Length: 339
Image 1: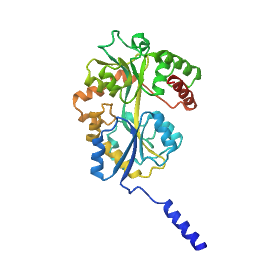
Image 2 (image 1 turned 135 degrees about the vertical axis):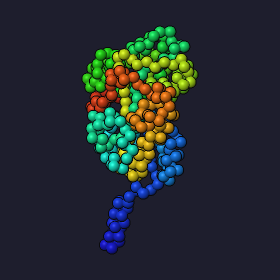
Image 3 (image 1 turned 90 degrees about the horizontal axis):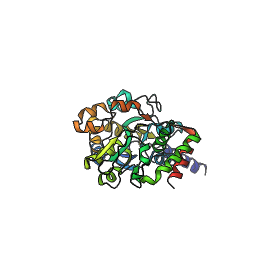
Image 4 (image 1 turned 45 degrees about the vertical axis):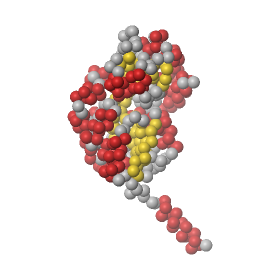
C-alpha cells in the first residue's frame, strides 16, 4: 500500500508540474469585429500555432469569463479601466516585454497609463473614441450634443453602444457631473435622464452599428469611431460629430489571464500583431486609431484620415476609470434601463 501510494503521489506531482507552453495552441479572447481572420491564419501558417478564437461584446462579459474560468484563455484584450480592475483582482499575469521586441513600435503616449503605470501587465493594441453619428439624409436638425438626442424626431431610430460606462458616463456629463462619478445620487440621476432617452433608442449594439447606419435603419446614435468610418464607406450621408459635453476615449490592451497555459505562445502572438505591416493590415479592415506609430506610417492617406482624431478633441477626451464599489450602482442602473 505504501509503495502504491508513493507511486500515485509521484504521478500526481508529475501531472501538476506539466508545462503546456510547448503546445502549439493559443486561446484568444477578444472583442468581436476586431481582428481580421487573415491575420490569424497568417500567424498560424508562420508559427504552426493553432489559434482558438473567442469573442465578447463588453468589458463586463470579458471580466466575468476570466473571473470564473481561469486557465481557459491565454490572451485577452481589455480597456484601460478594466486592466486596472483585472490587476486589482489578481486575474492577470505579468508580461515579459523582453520577449516582445516589437513593443518598441508603440508610441510613448500610450504607455505608462494610470491603470498600469509600469506596463507590467498590459500591451497597447488599438485606441479610439465614442462619438455621435447622424445620417444627414434622414435628420433635419444640426446635432452637436448628446442632449440633442432627446429630440422626438429620433423616436425608435438611434443605435447606442451596449456599454454601461460610456452611456451612463455620457448622461452624467450632460448633467454636469464627472463621467467617472462614484456618487450614487448622481449616477441614479443619470439613469433617470437615460430613461427619457430610451424611447428614441431602437437598439443597443456595439458590434454592428455600421450596418444599421449604412442601410438607414437608424438615423444616428452613439458608436465607436471605426463603426462610423465603416458606415461612411457605404453611405456618404453619415456624419461624425464630437459631442460638446463629453468625448469618451478608450485604449484596448493585451493582457495574459491568470493561469494561462500557453504564455510563450501569447507573447509570440503579441509580438506578431505589433509588427508594423501586420498592425497596418488590422487597421485597413477595422479603422480604429493605432498606437503603433510605425504601422501608422504605412497606412494610405485616406485610412489615416479615417482614423485621425483631431488633436483638440483628443485633448479634451476622457478615459473611463475604475469606479470601485460604485460599479454595482452602474450595473443596477444599466439593468433597469435595458428592462
